[in-house]
Each structure stands twice: as structure tokens, then as C-alpha cells.
Image (cartoon, rainbow, N blue to C red; front, side, top):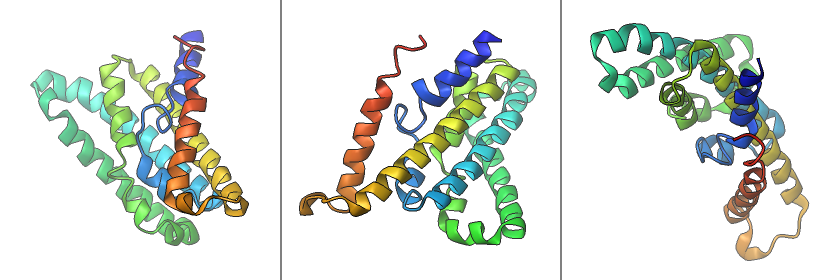
Length: 192
């Protein structure tokens, strides 16, 4: 039980998918202008991360390894992720049309979100069992939502801040992201 808690905390905070692994930068910068959109994107991506891990792990262990198809891991995982994103897109279009419209092209970009693929590959690379993989995916999903909300909050603060002309717009976002990464780096010693 304690090992699972360590995997959860480590994947959410210590090895945060955005601030430490530098994955998912596109939605991190593109979808954090408004907190509700950032949270919606975080939840949609998190759902895909967890679902993709739940589907890819057994396919890899019980189909690809016995057939000697491990070398096709990335291709198989991308196809699975693309299919799952289509399911999420259909669900949002029918259930929450306002969120579907506000996400625009970024919803389709979940397919190419390297965080989703990174989590599925990391679970295999870290040699996690199925339960550990799901906990790792959950922790990474929580970490992604945290990073989206934190950056959204920073961006809201930047709207009223006196930013020097040379740093206005995207440059100050990258400076803020760098500082947030340094702050999250401080968690590295918590869990080995």
C-alpha cells in the first residue's frame, strides 16, 4: 500500500509530467488562459491518460510480447490513444458541448499529447504491474491537472502585473514556466 502511495505522489509532484519531464507543453501553454478551460483540458487529458494505460498495458503484456511485436510498441500505442481520444471527443460533443467548443483544436491534439504516450511507455519501461501502472497514470493525470491549474493561476496574475514590454505575451509565460519547474524541482528529494 505504501509503495502505491509513493508511486502516486512521485508521479504527481516529484516527477511532474509538465514541470519535470517537460511533456505536454502545447496544451500547457495553449489552454491555460482561462482556469475553466485549463481544468477541462486537464480532466479530458487525464481521462485519456488513465484509459490509455488501462488498455495499452494488457495489450503489450499479453499480445505484443508473446507475438514478439514489442518493436511496434509506439505505433500500437498511438493507434490506441487516437481511438480513445475519438471516444472522448464524441462524449464531450454530446454531453458537454460548451467545453467541446471551447477546447477547439486542442481536444484533437490530445492524440498527439506526448504526456499520454509518455505515460504508457513509462509504465512498460519502469516494469510496473497493472495496478502500479494505473496508479502511475492516475498520479501523472493529477500532476497534469495541477500544472494546468497552477499555470492558469499564474496567467491570471500576469494579466494585471506590470510586465516589461520585452517580456509581454509568450516570453513571460516561458519565464513563469521555468520558475515553476524550478519550484517543482525542490520536491525531488522527497521520494527517491
